[in-house]
Each structure stands twice: as structure tokens, then as C-alpha cells.
Image (cartoon, rainbow, N blue to C red; front, side):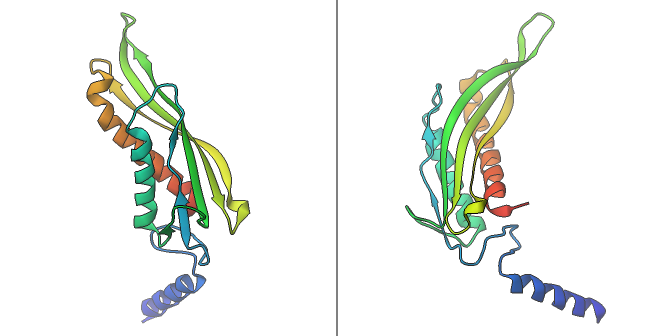
Length: 165
């Protein structure tokens, strides 16, 4: 009986606040829309599919995990991002001075604007990477690496913008 009363009390407290949800977001009740602008690719090296894939992944993340309505312009929350770097680098060298591991890194500059609560707005760089063996060409593994990097970036951006951990 005590558990039932405690559970009832906790559920009333959580639902009465109006800004917490079980998906981990903390969005004020009066924030109802989001605009995700197309991610621009300003990197020296270009992956032609990256910009669109990242834009769509961000839109999907907010659509699936929040009650925010996606609008083309003028949302309560605005996400504007630019890919600033798309680079590969050797990260592990063998005794014969040959690369054993390579790393693909994607960096983007994100501007997050909360129109209703400007103090929550920020501009920040995000970077994620995936390693791959030097025995594989980038062309052979690029699609898999990019998918993983996009997933990491969208998780990180989502958490920084609406999860407020």
C-alpha cells in the first residue's frame, strides 16, 4: 500500500511539472515547434551525401523523441549547423612506420536558438569520429563510418539542446 501511494505521489509530481518526460527531454510546455535548417557542408573535403543525411537524421530524432512540431521556418527552437571539417588521419603507426589505423572525423558548428528562452541558446562545435584499419580504403568503409558518426552527432546534439542533462 505504501508503494502504491509513493508511486501515485511521484507520478503526480512528474506530470504536474509539465516539462519532464520519460524520453529524457526537458522542454517547456510553451515550446511547441522546431526548425532544423539544412546542414551546410563547408568542409574542404566533401562527402556529397553527408549534409542531407545529417539534416534528415536530426529531423527524425526530434520528430521521434519529442512532441515538437517540425516547421520550415520560425520555430520556437532553431537548429542551424555547418559541417566545417571532414578529415581522415593516421592514428596508429607500426614499427615499419606504416599506418595501422586511420580515423575519419566530422566536425560541425551548431547554432542553437531558443526563441522563447534565449538564455538556453548557444553556439558550439561538435566532433565525432570512427576508426578503421589502414588495410581498408576509405571508399570501402566510408558509408558505415558516416552512419555511425551521424548517429553519435545527432545523439550529442539532441542531448545538448533538449535533454539538459
